[in-house]
Length: 180
Image (cartoon, rainbow, N blue to C red):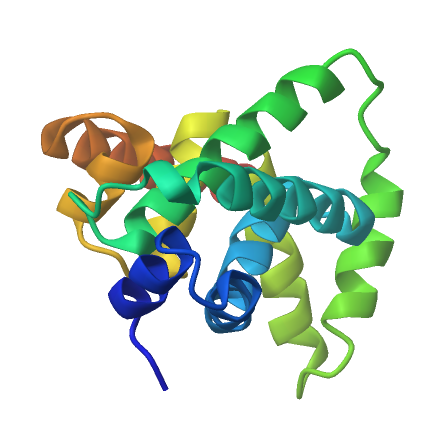
């Protein structure tokens, strides 16, 4: 198996370009999809955004200079595409709480106990109430377990800004969960 850097060089040099891209896609598509999915919640929307991300990666990969890790650049592309989508969707009406709860209950139905699924539902609903940037920083830190330096690089902020967004997200989620 090739590492990302070798695959990018292969892609940029036109040596089995499609194969190199396919290997990058296979290696990273699941993380990209789930990162987007945590931001938009709907599978169809996440799938559409992920497809847009990979189209953009294909078109911009020739210009990737490897000054950062590929995964950092990739998450940055996914972050920007997700924000673009969310900004477009602000004009639409929000889903009702009962529809969200039903979706979360269906997603959590494989869990061992009703209590754990209720906790998961409450957590997911609290996450959805966060401002977009805080939500994304929280997702990268909590679910992807990325360090603040990488989060700052992905979100285009400082390390201090990433830390502040994460801690503000935690504080807001705590307030939200205490209310419920």
